[in-house]
Amino acid sequence: AKVNGRRQSCFYDQTMSRDLVRRREIEAELRSAIVKNELSIFFQPIIDLDTGRIKTFEALVRWFHPEKGELKPDEFIPVAEETGVIVTLGNWITAQAAKAAAQWPEDVTIAVNLSPLQIKAPGAALGIMNALREAGLDPSRLELEVTESLFLDDHGATEHFIEELSAIGVRFALDDFGTGYSSLGYIQKYPFSKIKVDRSFVSGPNVGKKTDAIIHAVAELGSKLEMDIVAEGLETIDQVRTVRDAGCTLGQGYYFSRAVPDYLAAMLLSQEEDT
Ligand code: C2E
Ligand code: CA
Ligand code: CA
Ligand code: CA
Image 1: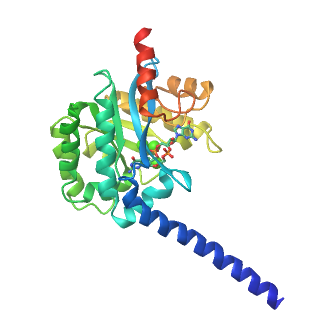
Image 2 (image 1 turned 60 degrees about the horizontal axis):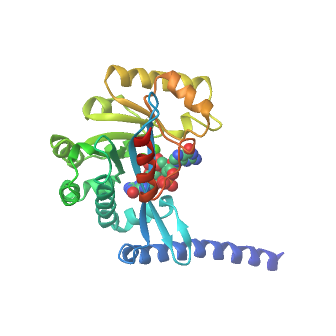
Image 3 (image 1 turned 180 degrees about the horizontal axis):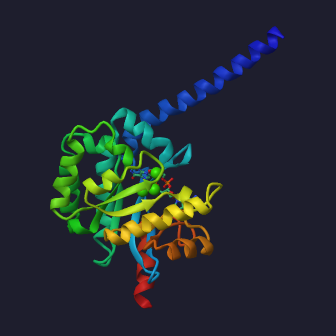
């Protein structure tokens, strides 16, 4: 029994340290990943549920690691936040996304995810403005997606950031709505043009009468406040119909398309022009 116990704890330690090693590696390699061209931005279309046309692309970062393969943002964005690399990384992402969007028709916008830490860093608004200027993209074509966690322990930096960028025409979307510390106060206080209802309200084990009622209520709020309501994570036509009937104006999900590289995004847009 003693031997067994030792083996078990040894195994446990090994898994622990393997996770830790991986994290350390990611931490160390993330800084150079940008320069080595291992990161790239993918684009997922957000569809107008009335017309079926692409309104926006959301920029989603990918890391193609030479040994580890494709890493998803959920694995390295938190590391980037802990280490502060998120500021450099975030500016790079915004710059790349703005450059791609500058090639698209003028009525198509680009949505970029911002981490709370990135926004609270000094010069955050300036980083965004530089990216826009360098790409030659009109500020009104950029939409910044933020989550409610941004508003916890706020020291005024957030408010300042949003005010400064709103003033030049940048738009804001409230992401993952319904998952965090949802407060209608944020919608009242900040100039959001869009609310993104989290995927968990659209598909999965919790979907039913209650989530349906919530989507309806949010959609009605959106229509009264002249905000777009996006349903995330649409995978089936039934889900698309449900959220459209509930009053959501926009939809995003694998039913329409996964996130694709820039040349495919451009191709999706040129296919629309032909129709
Ligand atoms: P998010 O902002 O909520 O992005 C949507 C996520 O849902 C994306 O995962 C997308 O690929 C996935 N998704 C889209 N449609 C469907 C669907 O129909 N079904 C399912 N199951 N999933 C769908 P991804 O790209 O892995 O990103 C995960 C999260 O990482 C994002 O959640 C966002 O919070 C963060 N993230 C991604 N890119 C960036 C970035 O450039 N900067 C920052 N700060 N965070 C990012
Ligand atoms: Ca998002
Ligand atoms: Ca989301
Ligand atoms: Ca998310």
